[in-house]
Amino acid sequence: QSVLTQPPSASGTPGQRVTISCSGSSSNIGSNTVNWYQQLPGTAPKLLIYSNNQRPSGVPYRISGSKSGTSASLAISGLQSEDEADYFCATWDDSLNGRLFGGGTRLTVL
Amino acid sequence: QVQLVQSGAEVRKPGASVKVSCKASGYTFAGYYMHWVRQAPGQGLEWVGRINQKSGDTNFAQKFQGRVTMTRDTSTSTASMELSRLRSDDTAVYYCVYTVSTSGFDYWGQGTLVTVSS
Image (cartoon, rainbow over all chains, first blue to last red):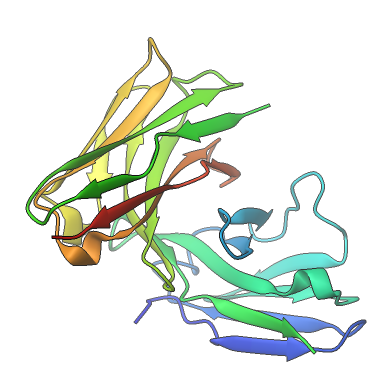
């Protein structure tokens, strides 16, 4: 069981807006920045969001990240079939002195 | 552009060791941190540890303490991770991940499948 809690699944129809949550504690999300990754089957994770809300070059504006207190969220608007993938949050934990990943959320586009 | 190219798939017997390498290009190797992350089949991501590319200082997840070694060779821009006393539950894809700075921006290698089977 991961220290960072994500819902195991999420879904939406094309064009909808979907949010994925990541819940932690004061020693991890509460005091460090959060990254979000997208993973397609058989490929390495791809960085979607870093430093809570920053998009790397090439990541569309319809993907955004936010953080409040000990929780973070990833929002995908204008859902497309190509968004169907696994999504992971990640941050540093000061107590464990290590990097943590959420358990992952499988997004299904209906 | 930054590229991390990892060594090929490995098969080992329980109790053996495996060394995975990660050759970097496109940036000054003696930069920030190289992390290693693994993913067992059908499972999530798990942090193994990291090495400071400049100083060589390491820190590891507690569950790997005593079994993992991380090194870097600045002359060849290559980072390596060695895991010993392998068990079947060490079967996973192992990724090297270069963190550019404290911002968290990172680059991932393509992954190396390590299979532990008798």
